Image 1 (cartoon, rainbow, N blue to C red):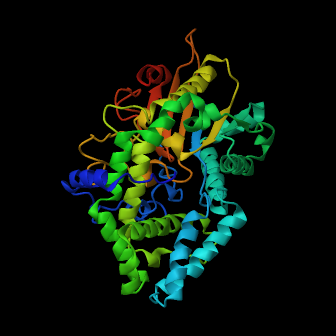
Image 2 (cartoon, rainbow, N blue to C red; image 1 turned 45 degrees about the vertical axis):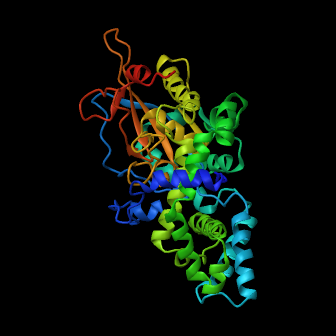
Image 3 (spheres, helix red, strand yellow; image 1 turned 135 degrees about the vertical axis):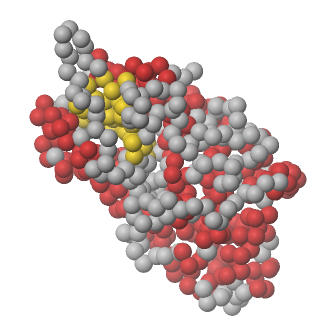
Length: 460
């Protein structure tokens, strides 16, 4: 998502004052470790560009209630890791580095940066800016294999009965490629599925809704909402931003050159450098020798990641208290999840699975509607979102490859009674409760009656 241009200094100063009233940032956040061994704090340095890490524990999923077996599965997945959208940040960094080199103003560390940036840009350009990377394709394949391993009987029956596996995408190249990688993972695990997997179809209204004409009010919000512009300008101009930028610049350039850069130039450079820093892990196969971690220390990287997270929070997340503009448009996707599960239960659909591939701008608002952990807490207009006062983190809510999966289970009809249907939700492959107004089949259960979800997930 593109960074929003700041407003005037006058607006920035007023917002900065309100931000400064509370502690914005805590370096000592407790670290919860993921499967790779990296801490949550480390993943937070990359925001929504963080590579995918499954959050579930294979072999430790709760068993379905006695007599219930899986009959259908569906997902909504963000595309996997990818190249950055364009070369603008790389070119911006190289321009400043070039000027400093001409003046003999690079530090020893600074002199090492340009070759790394050029290598990263070459890798992204060769792959195609914005395209799915090798790491992203593998994220999707491995996620598919784990889906099969969790539901072996379902996928065997889909293959045996020839039931359709429907594939839908936004039509954007990285989403289409993610669908291809995912389905290749399915057929690698169960080759007989090949005949069931349908050709992908594009549905922009469902999977690229943030760009569609029916959501012109949302697009106007991004372009001209005064509250949005003011809060993001205030975050950008908070004194901690200038300090982080000055420190980052001071490590790469000699004092005279660094001091000659205006605060705005220092911040622009630091934010472009962080964008590259965040993108590098996603291109770990195409640019294996690139490591940008030496060029930003963790405190500076974490603050710059917070700036990116603030944009995501206000542009696609829960945003301002009492407003729904950023997430109500995801209702079309929530309705489709309910409709597909309902059609399978009603016998009006023979689909074995429905697989959807989309973007962070769709995952984030859907997470709000579903009440997913860390996704729902809004910010008051007079108390802007910070890491201290809100759990929302891009790396947790919508990393590369983020996915929401619903598994439908049914028992066997008996004595004239129709089958009962239960749904289990996985969020990034972790068993996850539906929002608190939804009642599971039993206390402590991850399984919910389908009819209950139709009730509790109703929205206006």
